[in-house]
Length: 371
Image 1 (cartoon, rainbow, N blue to C red):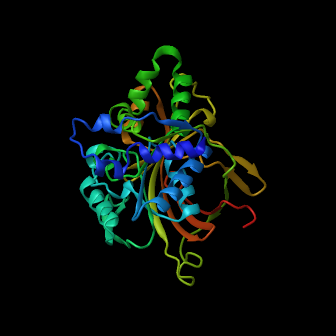
Image 2 (image 1 turned 60 degrees about the horizontal axis):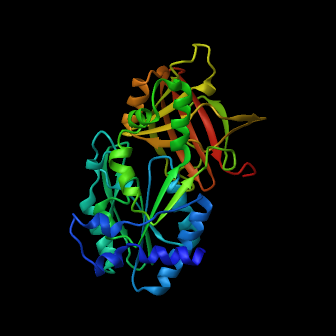
Image 3 (image 1 turned 90 degrees about the horizontal axis):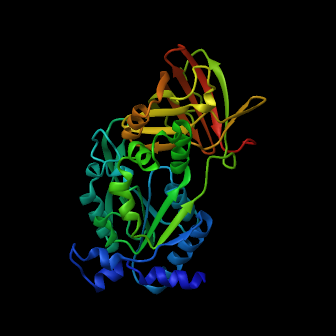
């Protein structure tokens, strides 16, 4: 069965198909039309790796893959998992932003540069991809990608399956579900039956049905990710008060560069919740430059000196926050957090200052408690 699926992936669209059967924009929909394969995250991961491996054996030159889907669906997790196994070049569409206010708006993406980068690599030429800094809201430089560095390139992004890119992709994968659907489920629970599901989708993710969902129908593999935040990939944190952040430990002696970030963090209380409602019922939003990150409730376990949290944060657009406020969610807590961080491989150390407290904390984070 899996072999038949892989063969179907090769024959339904893709870059070679476009080259053999050129089309106009008016006929592109019929050429791309296929019956998407709906699979679980793990099965989709297996099929994608197998498809890439077989395609590398059957064709000359670069294999190009597009992995698209809404924020929080799990597309970046899939990209990282595939890259860790087969070794490939990952191009994140987050770096192709022109710095406008809303990072997920289609018009803010520099498709011209992205297309040129892909065309250079498929021709066997080196290329320069931009590096975008969301704190500074601008491109801060370029990174050289060698054409010979990898036989596979994965484009990871919300609009990775857009019509402007599909003719350059050999394999197209859509990822839906994940915490993207978890947020919809929570909001529907908080709001009750006063609003239809369609209304909630258009309020919280106004770009999804118009600009994102239509492209997902052109995927050869469609992954329904049932993952929700859990402690399977927990983050372990040790936190203590610090008098000063002067003399950051080891930042210069080991050659590690400190990174400084400034955030605005806020908690939203559901419209139906009382003022005494626990923090687990709230939605946390973190703003960093023009990026917004969201997590559901305060999911954590305190064990001795450790604070253990699941990887539960995902990126959303500014309009998602506006939609939640329009639905009646109330900002009950808001503060600024400044963080200076140094990474030491599996462990990072940060000095964090919260403005309303006027205190500085030393925080150590890692994914392995033993480390």
